[in-house]
Image (cartoon, rainbow, N blue to C red; front, side, top):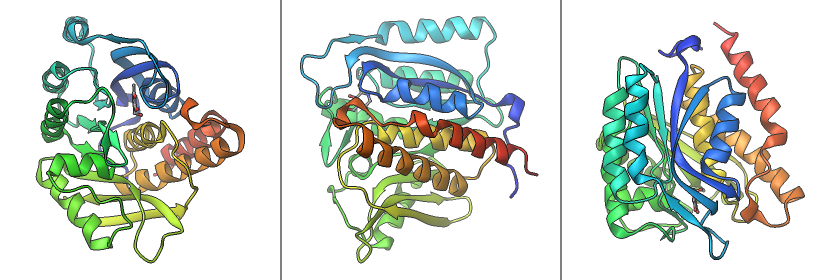
Length: 295
Ligand code: PXL
């Protein structure tokens, strides 16, 4: 297995997501996962919320749009350097242009922009996402090297009707190729079930530089598990920064997400509080360590 371009000691990222105090998702998932995988992580919160917006009532939402560029400019003045950014939930329409600027500001040789175009699930936008924001997020995908949507987000980005699956393999590959045609060299889709294989669920990825697609499908566990998209995206990011190719990264992220869902189903009666991912972090960290040790 050949390692890709980023060297271990240069491996760091700037994670741009909200921080929700309760209901694990975005930064409360990304930071522990990336750190456990050996990735040094700086955080740029897009908003601070009392809880995430899916299933809790009357959440408190503090928008940090006006602070984001001054934070990034401060880091630039301090000569901070990032080998990647990993973006997710955004707090306002104005943040899209700001994130585009930040990607440009820190882009350098070997830099990777991971964009999770967070905006909805199950065919619907999240409560704080307007149509204008969804359009902006679709534009942001053009700045990505690796894009990580679910099917709801992919349909919005491509302007095609939402199809909840199960899917023909060819349909999924077509969606992945169309996402890459917008700019990213690699695309990963979550929430994939294929016709005739309804007992399994997982992800699909495509590398446009190799014109190659692969599916990773594991035993389906019924239920809607909040925060698992962020868990998956954080793990793909961590795995690629550890030198895995996108296929290897997708396999490990699918397996880690699946293990966490199994534990959530067993130990978390209310799924809106987020995935029980912590117990599996030592396994994930050890897998990354093993990988880094191979040449
Ligand atoms: O997991 C996506 C996400 C992230 N952040 C916030 C959310 C959601 C989805 O509901 O509400 C605040």
